[in-house]
Structures are given as structure tokens and as C-alpha cells.
Image (cartoon, rainbow, N blue to C red):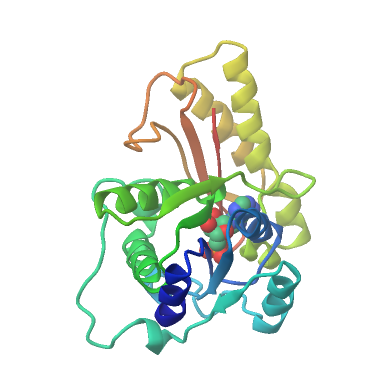
Length: 270
Ligand code: AMP
């Protein structure tokens, strides 16, 4: 991969890069399409990254279907799928990790200790393997996108990070590879995530600024659903990820919630 990328660089080709864990859905495809349109050469990586899963999380159960992904990617005219094995990515005696302080230990980092260290270490390695000019990420994983932007700046990676809007089902549920594991009832009830975020947006438009008041309204809407087990609702500044008291334009509202066994996240930026 490095050899190929170096060659492309010599030919002045612009490399676009979409890192994924596979089981591609239209959320991934929106990143792939934008990247396809903006670059000479498009690399998509598929790697279910073991270091970002906790010991009790769903690494083994995470859906995988390489053939299906390969067909979808070739339809989108992806030039190269980088599909390494675990042992190609991690040396057994690897002792170097990339960790973004402060931003990694709040929101999803609270319940998923070590998750962002795993994500950011992998993404740094992929940047050093693929040499992308532009890398594409989804707003769906808002905290991840913010952390990766910071890491890229702090470590002087010469790659531009683009964050694209969340793609949703008709009912508003954000597309995720994990949605496949929702029962029909859980899937219906999970629509409340986006419904509550939209409600928050509307309350802001009506002039409500008090973060606690809006948080409580979101709590109530979600807790009304039988299959929901709320993990957090946070209203934070997008730079620091610290909670705010007053909501303003640009504030991030982020939710993590389980429906049955399936952990889902969603967010909006006001
Ligand atoms: P994943 O395969 O879940 O690691 O996701 C790979 C990339 O696709 C990440 O940058 C995600 O934020 C992005 N992504 C996942 N779901 C969506 C979605 N529904 N809309 C937009 N981007 C998404």
C-alpha cells in the first residue's frame, strides 16, 4: 500500500481515503461518492479494529461481509480496497499508541475506556500507510471526527479532514452497521434518538437556550421507550467537548443509548 501510494504521489495524483470497518451502508457510500468526485485515486480501508473494542464489546459479533463490500465498492469505482489482516496492522510487541488528551475520556470515552486510543492509533497508522491528501469521516461519529481533526493538527499530518453529514433512514434513524442487530420493535423505538434531537433543535429555534432544560426534555422522550437504556445525553462545546450551560449556534448535542443489546449513538450540531 505504501509503495503504491508513493508511486501515485510521484505522479502528482490526489489520493482520497475513506477508512471504514466494512459492512458498507449508504452512510459509508456518501463518503465514498464525495471522495470519488474530489480525488484522482480513491482508497477505502476495511478493517474491524480490535484495539477500539473493549473486552466485553461486540468485536466478534461485528458484522463482516467482504464480498458484498467489494461489490459495492467496485460499483462506486473505488480504486483500491485496503483490507489488511490484524497481524498486518499490529506488531505483536507494539508499544506505541496515539492518545488525544481530554477529548478521549468524555462522552463515549467514559463507557468505552481505551476506545479512542484504539481509533486514533489506527487512523494515524493508516495515514502513514495510505498517504491520503483528503480523508473523509461521518458526522454520525461526532466525537471521533473532532478527535481525529485534533490529532491531525497536533501531529502535523498533511491530510485534510472532511466531515460529511449523517445519512439516515426515512424514519430518522442514523444508518449504522449495528442496526442489523435491532429487533423490529427496537428499530422503531430507536427513531426517538433523532426525534429528540430534532425537538431540541426546534426548541432552540423558539428561543430556549438552557441546556439542562433541553437535556431533561430529551431524557423524558427517550426514557418513554420501553427498550431504551440511555447512556448519556450531553450538550457540549465542539472544541473542548465540555458541557455548556447555554446553548448557542454550533453547540453539539450527543446521545448514546442502548436498544436491547445494541448501543447506538446520534448527535446534531445546533
Ligand atoms: P465505521 O465503518 O462505522 O467505522 O464508519 C466508517 C465511517 O463512516 C466513519 O467516518 C463514520 O462516521 C462514517 N459513517 C458511519 N455511519 C454513517 C452515517 N449514517 N452517515 C454518515 N457517515 C457515517
